[in-house]
Length: 161
Image (cartoon, rainbow, N blue to C red; front, side):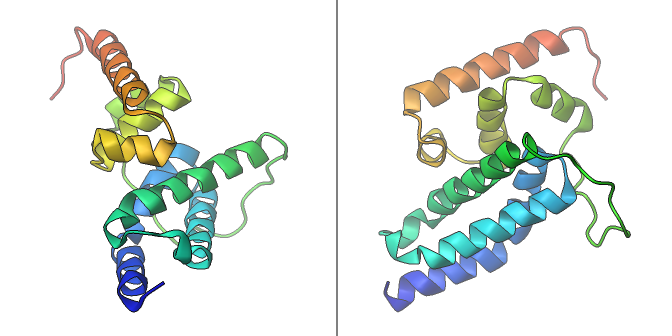
């Protein structure tokens, strides 16, 4: 990997770490697991930086690694029994963008909720979401619009401030 790609990756990882944590937390709903997912994704990205062909694609490349880390933790979670937490939190849990809306996104099927989060929370394009999730663009579009339709139906008649 040439110096420019290494620098771009390092700069991106440092500048966007709060966004990574917010996304991981929105999926995992647990501070420690979100931190673990981000840490694992950063380590994997640094180990595999040679697989990054285009420095301009670092965003989608890293988000895919982060999503895979979150999915790994979700799989592990189903096989383990959680122990009570000890000590106080070091980091504040991120404030949901809109708690009311966040609960409704959480109620969507996981694959639909992921598309909604990546599109609106992380502001990724449909093409970028396609690359991150490994789905074709038409699948991403159908999940996005199905999710938006479900959200619209669940929010009909609800008065927002």
